[in-house]
Amino acid sequence: MQGVGNDFVVMDNRFSSLSEDLSSLAIRVCDRKFGVGADGLLVLDNSDRADFLMRMYNPDGTPDVCGNGLRCIARYAREREIVCNDAMRIETLVDVRRATLRRDAQGEFVSVTVEMGQPHFAPSEIPVSVSGSRVIDLPLRLPGEYCLPITSLSTGSTHSVAFVDELPGDEEFFRISPMVENHSIFPERTSLMWCKVEAENVMRLRIWERGAGETLGCGTGACAAAVASILHGDAHKNSPITVMSKGGTLQIVWNESGILMTGPTEWVFEGEFLI
Image 1 (cartoon, helix red, strand yellow):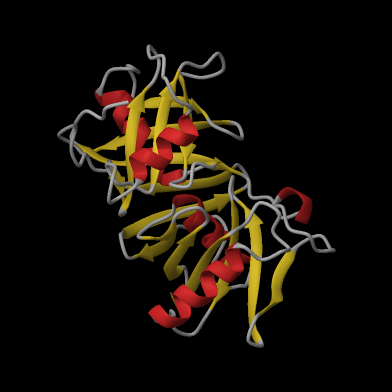
Image 2: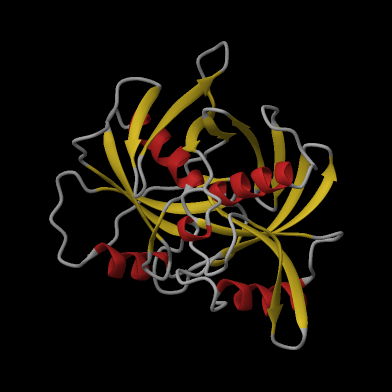
């Protein structure tokens, strides 16, 4: 399945007994040359706290939280009749999140809205090894005397947002992004959202995800960029923010209840993978 170009292998693990751990399986499955190929492995499992549990693993095997994955697995669970309602509760690595399928007047699927919780700004919660209460426009010094101002926060996953006049070309993007991901101030690494503000409440991203590299979309990253744009004064809280990436467009709202993310999901194909 895919959501704004963020593609996943989705697996129902409620009745399975795997012969290998899920991190190792994710590395094999997500390999685009020798596996199925995906930005992540989504594993649906039983939960005592919600309708079901979602585990997400990056292509390098690290567990993570994923907004686009939440939308995909919500549609998967509904259309496979794992849940019987368009509204559901999904347990994740960080907490229980609500998801709602949206339909048109004819009852056809349109999009999924997921509750993403409140963003976290304290450096210890991101985590990032700096002082202060928030990380806003921190001048991150990189090799080659390169300095990139970043705003870092957590939306369930660690993100850094760099506001730029123009999105970087390939040379700058592939040279700088891994340096930021693996910078020593990030004990668990960070994703990097290169962000160009197109207009008020409208922005465009080029995305580098920790553990995955460049991806066409990132739900938690889009949420982080939207919140960061509000902190920068380029967008308004309580109003829909349009976040565009190479894979498509998401609508983000941050209000007193938390972050809401709305976007499409698509089935791509089904198959079998030999364990």
